[in-house]
Image 1 (cartoon, rainbow, N blue to C red):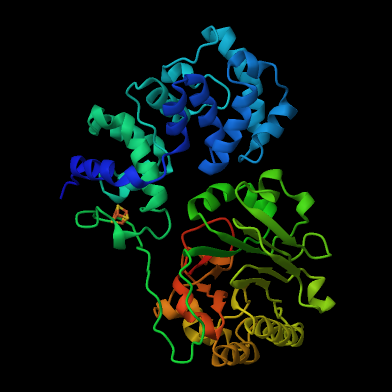
Image 2 (cartoon, rainbow, N blue to C red):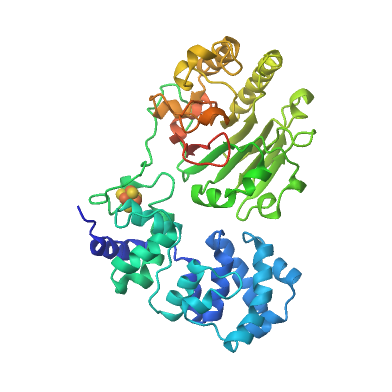
Length: 488
Ligand code: SF4
């Protein structure tokens, strides 16, 4: 059945009135100035709208015209636009922009796509957006939201944003070209989110084919008689845990885009294998987050990092045992009504030479988090380096007594769960074949020969605060994939 695009866009026009207006549209409406729209669009790539808006305001206070921009050097521009994503690159583009505008376009922003893409830092997406928003001329800006949602609707069947743009030029009536980006960006940020779209409250739910979509599983778990803790009416926080197996490597492979798409409130990383000073600025001080690091003393080994949109009230690196703390294994952030504990459990090793040490870590950590749970809710996440049951790995029979599936490691998980801690993924999913780690050997990931060893647990009194959990097994970049918890 053909998707009714007219009906969908008409409904969305009404729907997004209450959504946040994308920052570039806002600047266009407020200024009617193509130069400011162009600069704001350059700043906005890979950057949250609120960060772009603040950076643009600081910059425009000093440079509202190409001539004023030409008077600022690159270090000054960096300071003014920080912390937008890739601020050093963008400062270089902005420094070069007045010269190119003056030389080729008499210091005016051109309105043709072929001319716009000759400007520093301007790709096809930016050019289309500037032409549409600043000049109100027909152009279709296809960003990740437009590309994704048009394919979800089955209106196009494409694999790249450029293919989507070309398909839409053929198919989408021209009267929609200028508006479609603003509509779908707002809708994609607010409802049809890249991970876990809110289909349960979507105004298009009755006729959206939801092609390739895994809807968000949003339901509180059944209450326990003895839960004891009052469920606060706070917004749902999206938490992501990911063993990146080297943060410097993953930073070069789409990390910023993945984080942008996942839109976590808290992001916990394990096995960062880097000191903070070894990381690129854009990762060490990721825009929109406060970052906390607990690296191992030994360079290039282990280590955890946690990024939070809301700064933590207190931070604790380690659990008070140098055997584990020197290896950068546990980082705890305290917030108003919960603790967030990011863990990288030791690997018991192929020859099981660290099995005993791992058992001691397990017990020390259990004692530590139980102490925290006396005071407030506890969320504990990370790479536990153990598959709990036979359902949690592809080949259980072949791995009995192997590291990560030894009876000793599994018994600790049993005891932990018997003490009331909730394995949040299993609270929602009983199906086998859902894994979070695959060996790099033998095409294991393509064949889904994997293990579920990355978890989110909550303390026994906080199960009512769990609103959803999943494994994001389509996210590449590491031999682990991210796991997710929605927590209220
Ligand atoms: S029903 Fe779901 S997939 Fe379809 S548009 Fe709405 S949120 Fe997106």
